[in-house]
Length: 244
Ligand SMILES: C[S@@+](CC[C@H](N)C(=O)[O-])C[C@H]1O[C@@H](n2cnc3c(N)ncnc32)[C@H](O)[C@@H]1O
Image (cartoon, rainbow, N blue to C red; front, side, top):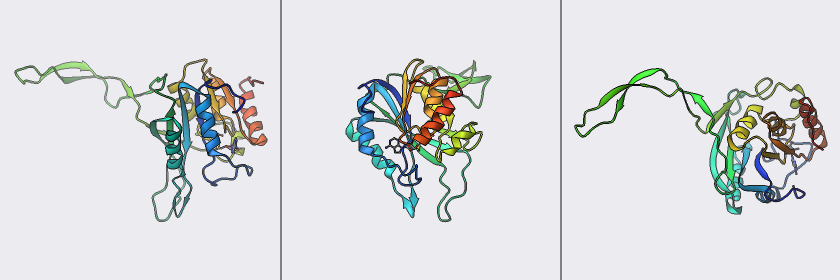
Protein backbone atom coordinates (compact mmCIF):
# COMPACT_ATOMS: atom_id res chain seq x y z
CA UNK A 1 0.00 0.00 0.00
CA UNK A 2 2.96 2.35 0.66
CA UNK A 3 3.69 2.35 -3.07
CA UNK A 4 0.18 3.50 -3.97
CA UNK A 5 -0.65 7.12 -4.70
CA UNK A 6 -2.41 9.10 -1.97
CA UNK A 7 -6.15 9.63 -2.53
CA UNK A 8 -6.29 7.31 -5.54
CA UNK A 9 -8.83 4.66 -4.49
CA UNK A 10 -12.59 5.01 -4.92
CA UNK A 11 -13.59 1.88 -3.00
CA UNK A 12 -11.92 -0.78 -0.87
CA UNK A 13 -13.79 -4.03 -0.22
CA UNK A 14 -11.78 -6.15 2.18
CA UNK A 15 -11.91 -8.57 5.06
CA UNK A 16 -9.07 -8.89 7.57
CA UNK A 17 -7.97 -11.99 9.44
CA UNK A 18 -10.40 -12.27 12.41
CA UNK A 19 -8.35 -12.50 15.59
CA UNK A 20 -6.44 -15.76 15.20
CA UNK A 21 -9.54 -17.58 13.98
CA UNK A 22 -7.81 -19.02 10.97
CA UNK A 23 -4.16 -19.43 10.26
CA UNK A 24 -3.55 -17.80 6.87
CA UNK A 25 -0.31 -19.63 6.16
CA UNK A 26 1.02 -18.16 9.42
CA UNK A 27 0.77 -14.49 8.40
CA UNK A 28 -0.37 -11.85 10.86
CA UNK A 29 -1.53 -8.37 10.03
CA UNK A 30 -0.91 -4.95 11.48
CA UNK A 31 -4.33 -3.35 11.94
CA UNK A 32 -3.01 0.15 12.71
CA UNK A 33 -0.77 0.15 9.61
CA UNK A 34 -3.56 -1.08 7.32
CA UNK A 35 -6.10 1.42 8.74
CA UNK A 36 -3.72 4.38 8.32
CA UNK A 37 -2.78 3.19 4.83
CA UNK A 38 -6.43 2.95 3.81
CA UNK A 39 -7.09 6.49 5.03
CA UNK A 40 -4.15 7.73 2.98
CA UNK A 41 -5.03 5.98 -0.30
CA UNK A 42 -8.80 6.61 -0.18
CA UNK A 43 -10.10 9.52 -2.26
CA UNK A 44 -12.19 12.19 -0.54
CA UNK A 45 -15.70 10.75 -0.67
CA UNK A 46 -14.26 7.25 -1.17
CA UNK A 47 -15.50 4.27 0.82
CA UNK A 48 -13.97 1.29 2.63
CA UNK A 49 -16.09 -1.81 3.23
CA UNK A 50 -14.55 -3.68 6.17
CA UNK A 51 -16.11 -7.14 6.49
CA UNK A 52 -15.37 -8.44 9.96
CA UNK A 53 -16.49 -10.89 12.61
CA UNK A 54 -15.26 -11.87 16.04
CA UNK A 55 -13.67 -14.96 17.40
CA UNK A 56 -16.02 -16.67 19.83
CA UNK A 57 -14.09 -18.25 22.66
CA UNK A 58 -16.25 -18.29 25.76
CA UNK A 59 -17.59 -14.89 24.66
CA UNK A 60 -17.06 -12.67 21.63
CA UNK A 61 -13.71 -10.88 21.43
CA UNK A 62 -15.34 -7.68 20.05
CA UNK A 63 -12.23 -6.98 18.00
CA UNK A 64 -14.69 -5.84 15.33
CA UNK A 65 -16.02 -3.03 17.55
CA UNK A 66 -12.53 -1.97 18.60
CA UNK A 67 -11.49 -1.75 14.97
CA UNK A 68 -14.62 0.26 14.09
CA UNK A 69 -13.95 2.76 16.86
CA UNK A 70 -10.32 3.04 15.86
CA UNK A 71 -11.28 3.76 12.23
CA UNK A 72 -13.48 6.58 13.51
CA UNK A 73 -10.71 7.97 15.69
CA UNK A 74 -8.21 8.18 12.83
CA UNK A 75 -10.62 10.12 10.62
CA UNK A 76 -13.02 7.79 8.81
CA UNK A 77 -16.75 8.38 9.10
CA UNK A 78 -18.66 5.24 10.17
CA UNK A 79 -21.19 5.84 7.43
CA UNK A 80 -23.13 2.65 8.22
CA UNK A 81 -22.85 -0.65 10.03
CA UNK A 82 -24.33 -3.26 7.72
CA UNK A 83 -24.95 -6.94 8.34
CA UNK A 84 -23.80 -9.78 6.10
CA UNK A 85 -26.23 -12.57 6.99
CA UNK A 86 -25.23 -16.10 6.06
CA UNK A 87 -28.23 -18.04 4.78
CA UNK A 88 -26.67 -21.38 5.68
CA UNK A 89 -24.45 -21.83 8.73
CA UNK A 90 -23.55 -24.95 10.68
CA UNK A 91 -24.73 -25.19 14.29
CA UNK A 92 -21.95 -23.73 16.41
CA UNK A 93 -22.63 -23.22 20.11
CA UNK A 94 -24.45 -25.26 22.73
CA UNK A 95 -25.15 -22.29 25.03
CA UNK A 96 -25.93 -19.49 22.55
CA UNK A 97 -27.71 -19.04 19.25
CA UNK A 98 -25.77 -19.99 16.14
CA UNK A 99 -23.91 -16.98 14.84
CA UNK A 100 -25.17 -16.26 11.35
CA UNK A 101 -23.72 -12.85 10.51
CA UNK A 102 -20.68 -10.65 10.14
CA UNK A 103 -20.45 -6.87 10.15
CA UNK A 104 -19.83 -4.82 7.04
CA UNK A 105 -18.53 -1.46 8.25
CA UNK A 106 -19.12 1.21 5.62
CA UNK A 107 -16.32 3.69 6.30
CA UNK A 108 -16.11 6.85 4.26
CA UNK A 109 -13.65 9.67 3.91
CA UNK A 110 -16.16 12.49 4.30
CA UNK A 111 -19.58 11.91 2.81
CA UNK A 112 -19.66 9.15 0.13
CA UNK A 113 -19.35 10.71 -3.31
CA UNK A 114 -21.24 7.88 -5.01
CA UNK A 115 -24.33 5.98 -3.88
CA UNK A 116 -26.30 3.89 -6.34
CA UNK A 117 -28.93 2.31 -4.06
CA UNK A 118 -29.68 -1.31 -4.90
CA UNK A 119 -33.38 -2.07 -5.20
CA UNK A 120 -35.54 -5.09 -4.43
CA UNK A 121 -39.12 -5.93 -5.47
CA UNK A 122 -41.87 -4.78 -3.11
CA UNK A 123 -44.10 -7.46 -1.57
CA UNK A 124 -47.32 -5.83 -2.83
CA UNK A 125 -47.59 -4.42 -6.31
CA UNK A 126 -50.31 -3.52 -8.77
CA UNK A 127 -53.09 -0.99 -8.08
CA UNK A 128 -54.68 -0.16 -4.73
CA UNK A 129 -56.96 2.50 -3.26
CA UNK A 130 -54.58 4.63 -1.19
CA UNK A 131 -55.17 7.62 1.08
CA UNK A 132 -54.59 10.83 -0.79
CA UNK A 133 -54.42 14.42 0.37
CA UNK A 134 -56.43 14.65 3.56
CA UNK A 135 -58.00 18.10 3.09
CA UNK A 136 -59.16 20.67 5.68
CA UNK A 137 -62.44 18.72 6.04
CA UNK A 138 -60.29 15.90 7.57
CA UNK A 139 -61.87 13.41 5.20
CA UNK A 140 -59.56 10.74 3.84
CA UNK A 141 -59.91 10.79 0.11
CA UNK A 142 -58.85 7.57 -1.52
CA UNK A 143 -57.63 7.26 -5.07
CA UNK A 144 -56.57 4.34 -7.20
CA UNK A 145 -52.77 4.39 -7.45
CA UNK A 146 -50.13 2.07 -8.78
CA UNK A 147 -47.92 0.78 -5.95
CA UNK A 148 -44.18 1.01 -6.34
CA UNK A 149 -42.71 -2.12 -7.90
CA UNK A 150 -39.40 -1.83 -6.06
CA UNK A 151 -37.85 -0.23 -3.00
CA UNK A 152 -34.34 0.44 -1.76
CA UNK A 153 -32.89 -2.53 0.10
CA UNK A 154 -32.29 -2.53 3.85
CA UNK A 155 -28.77 -2.65 5.28
CA UNK A 156 -29.00 -6.37 6.06
CA UNK A 157 -27.81 -8.42 3.09
CA UNK A 158 -28.15 -12.21 2.99
CA UNK A 159 -26.01 -14.57 0.96
CA UNK A 160 -25.77 -18.32 0.59
CA UNK A 161 -22.28 -19.49 1.46
CA UNK A 162 -20.21 -22.46 0.29
CA UNK A 163 -19.86 -23.99 -3.16
CA UNK A 164 -22.29 -22.36 -5.59
CA UNK A 165 -23.24 -19.68 -3.05
CA UNK A 166 -19.93 -17.99 -2.32
CA UNK A 167 -18.62 -18.72 -5.82
CA UNK A 168 -18.61 -21.45 -8.44
CA UNK A 169 -14.80 -21.26 -8.72
CA UNK A 170 -13.61 -24.53 -7.15
CA UNK A 171 -10.05 -23.23 -6.85
CA UNK A 172 -11.20 -20.43 -4.50
CA UNK A 173 -11.94 -22.95 -1.76
CA UNK A 174 -8.21 -23.64 -1.37
CA UNK A 175 -8.48 -20.40 0.65
CA UNK A 176 -10.09 -20.87 4.09
CA UNK A 177 -12.25 -17.72 4.23
CA UNK A 178 -13.65 -16.57 0.91
CA UNK A 179 -16.48 -14.03 1.01
CA UNK A 180 -19.37 -14.22 -1.48
CA UNK A 181 -18.80 -12.81 -4.94
CA UNK A 182 -22.25 -11.23 -4.78
CA UNK A 183 -21.30 -9.34 -1.61
CA UNK A 184 -18.35 -7.72 -3.40
CA UNK A 185 -20.45 -7.12 -6.52
CA UNK A 186 -23.25 -5.42 -4.53
CA UNK A 187 -20.84 -3.04 -2.79
CA UNK A 188 -18.94 -2.25 -5.99
CA UNK A 189 -22.18 -1.31 -7.77
CA UNK A 190 -23.42 0.68 -4.76
CA UNK A 191 -20.37 2.86 -4.12
CA UNK A 192 -18.59 3.22 -7.50
CA UNK A 193 -19.10 3.97 -11.18
CA UNK A 194 -17.54 2.07 -14.12
CA UNK A 195 -13.86 2.99 -14.49
CA UNK A 196 -13.39 3.72 -10.76
CA UNK A 197 -10.54 2.07 -8.85
CA UNK A 198 -11.43 -0.77 -6.44
CA UNK A 199 -8.85 -2.07 -3.96
CA UNK A 200 -8.43 -5.05 -1.63
CA UNK A 201 -5.23 -5.01 0.49
CA UNK A 202 -5.92 -8.56 1.79
CA UNK A 203 -7.60 -10.08 -1.24
CA UNK A 204 -7.07 -13.77 -0.44
CA UNK A 205 -8.57 -15.79 -3.28
CA UNK A 206 -9.18 -12.61 -5.29
CA UNK A 207 -12.94 -12.15 -4.91
CA UNK A 208 -12.88 -8.33 -4.90
CA UNK A 209 -10.53 -7.97 -7.92
CA UNK A 210 -12.54 -10.55 -9.88
CA UNK A 211 -15.85 -8.79 -9.25
CA UNK A 212 -14.33 -5.36 -9.94
CA UNK A 213 -13.16 -6.67 -13.31
CA UNK A 214 -16.61 -8.09 -14.09
CA UNK A 215 -18.18 -4.75 -13.08
CA UNK A 216 -15.81 -2.90 -15.44
CA UNK A 217 -13.93 -1.15 -12.65
CA UNK A 218 -10.13 -0.96 -12.37
CA UNK A 219 -8.70 -2.97 -9.50
CA UNK A 220 -5.70 -3.57 -7.27
CA UNK A 221 -5.51 -6.75 -5.20
CA UNK A 222 -2.77 -7.55 -2.70
CA UNK A 223 -2.18 -10.49 -0.37
CA UNK A 224 0.83 -11.37 1.73
CA UNK A 225 0.61 -15.05 0.81
CA UNK A 226 2.02 -15.98 -2.63
CA UNK A 227 -0.11 -19.12 -2.54
CA UNK A 228 -3.32 -17.06 -2.28
CA UNK A 229 -2.12 -14.59 -4.90
CA UNK A 230 -1.73 -17.56 -7.28
CA UNK A 231 -5.35 -18.56 -6.61
CA UNK A 232 -6.50 -14.99 -7.22
CA UNK A 233 -4.56 -14.82 -10.48
CA UNK A 234 -6.07 -18.08 -11.64
CA UNK A 235 -9.61 -16.82 -10.95
CA UNK A 236 -9.01 -13.51 -12.68
CA UNK A 237 -7.15 -14.99 -15.66
CA UNK A 238 -10.26 -17.02 -16.43
CA UNK A 239 -11.78 -13.67 -17.45
CA UNK A 240 -8.77 -12.78 -19.56
CA UNK A 241 -7.21 -9.94 -17.65
CA UNK A 242 -4.29 -9.59 -15.26
CA UNK A 243 -2.67 -6.22 -14.92
CA UNK A 244 1.09 -6.17 -14.43
C1 LIG B 1 -10.36 -13.08 5.47
S1 LIG B 1 -9.07 -13.36 4.33
C2 LIG B 1 -9.63 -12.51 2.89
C3 LIG B 1 -10.43 -13.39 1.96
C4 LIG B 1 -10.92 -12.70 0.69
N1 LIG B 1 -11.87 -11.65 0.99
C5 LIG B 1 -11.53 -13.71 -0.28
O1 LIG B 1 -12.71 -13.57 -0.66
O2 LIG B 1 -10.85 -14.65 -0.66
C6 LIG B 1 -7.76 -12.40 4.93
C7 LIG B 1 -6.51 -12.40 4.07
O3 LIG B 1 -5.56 -11.49 4.65
C8 LIG B 1 -4.28 -11.94 4.27
N2 LIG B 1 -3.26 -11.28 5.09
C9 LIG B 1 -2.91 -11.53 6.39
N3 LIG B 1 -1.95 -10.71 6.81
C10 LIG B 1 -1.71 -9.88 5.75
C11 LIG B 1 -0.80 -8.78 5.57
N4 LIG B 1 0.02 -8.40 6.54
N5 LIG B 1 -0.80 -8.15 4.36
C12 LIG B 1 -1.63 -8.55 3.35
N6 LIG B 1 -2.49 -9.60 3.47
C13 LIG B 1 -2.53 -10.24 4.65
C14 LIG B 1 -4.34 -13.44 4.45
O4 LIG B 1 -3.35 -14.10 3.68
C15 LIG B 1 -5.77 -13.72 3.97
O5 LIG B 1 -5.78 -14.15 2.62
